[in-house]
Length: 466
Image (cartoon, rainbow, N blue to C red; front, side, top):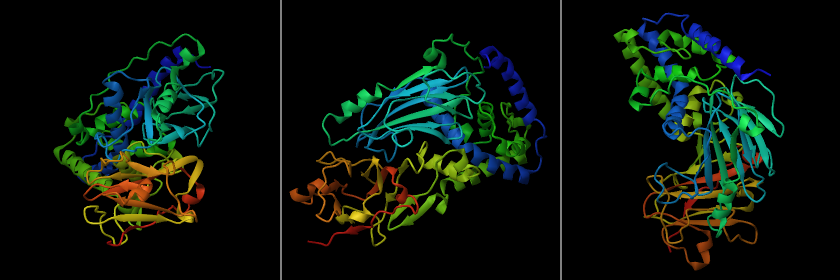
């Protein structure tokens, strides 16, 4: 076992290695070379910057590391903080600081609903899961360790997950049935059973001395959108163990001032080089914001996302996909955990518009969303601004946990319109706004046959005029 004292002795040498690593090459004076390197560096760094922006707001500025933040309400029409929120789960989140010692996460046994723990590293890789799909329905205690920790694993730990970086985002999702009275309170009680402890707290050992380091650089979006992104990138690289497969790549970026833990001085760049870097950032952002078909495909009016989130093995080398995924939906799930097709067009290729038409989506028994018994599916309605739709039923999503009426042959018709389709059909009605709208189908734990090939829901059709 390596003692904490020895760890603190070793860390300066690790930091020294970082300085040597980043100073092996002089800054380039070639604007063309700077442009090429900066574009690749920005795409690589983009998800890390988005992650740090979120961490700074949620944990650094408030000092809320290693503490669960428990959201105790479901998103609805009044929820405007994020676009396309779900009405299926509530969240408990925490930022883990692993510099001094590992963190022990305890999750309860959850037999009657979907439940998951997702761990996201500084690159935004989903490096570990626990819960319904991966560890089952029993209670589990896991330990999350940083890149330089070596020691004895305390008794009672079911699994140890190692992060490449010092900081980890922890997301707990617990399914709620919004149409079942009292279900939200049941989930809030489950939330309270999730726990976080330092390893020393968990094992009863003496606490290590708090690790001292320079303060976190304040996050400024204007700086992150300029050549100043290199300063943030360097800080973040200094907080993780660079993967062997990416050492040469990071080394190549040193020609524009990139290096783990290195202070970035923009004044050392010539004006042509600085302008080339600024131009590269604009080019990179254009590529990130408009990735085209690299993120998935469109079939039957549905956008079918591919494997845009995952662990290092899955995302290795896919830097543009990783960046675009972070832009589209930071902290998204692996495809095996959740699959989110979204519908924008009807069978005629026209945008969905409930001010002009009523619609239906008809599932044969064989076309119903392929879901594992431990998971569920739902469809959520959104208005033109990508928020949920206020309606007389207070129904914002509909799915297999709803009290639906199926035909005798197992088929299902859902009604997508502004006005009620009639009392006999309201059980299958997902109210739409009196304007254009879109929808997202969420399948939590899709069955394997729904992933290869990717499941495509039936086309949405206008109903004939009555």
